[in-house]
Image (tube, rainbow, N blue to C red):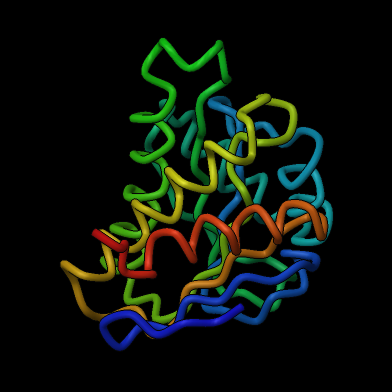
Length: 181
């Protein structure tokens, strides 16, 4: 699925984020920036040791914030590492922290002159955030950002499964389709 919002293309698709050719890809990192499983492990493995060396130099990243490193051996020139929240039932500010993770990543991208960026579905793997809730938070944050700033040409969501893609497509459709009164 693809749509244009305020001169920015928003694309939803399945795939392997480590193969994306956008200026930056976003890593769903842990707060120690230590690599790990899922998307985090795949990015560190595909990108090589240079990414980890930069992460060690940075040290850590609080939940809801983002830091940037080189892309190492990836097609993307940069990796933006953001820490999403662990889902604890939805009553501990997880939605606000997830929104902050997306907005921090986008602000850092813009400040780093990034024109295109690829996101995974942050916090929906090991951190347990339900994809239905996470997709609504993520897309609402992205659309809000696109409408209030210029500079990003393209934002992609690279989703792990067809199920996740369908959930994101449904969330996006509900956000961009005018509601009947």
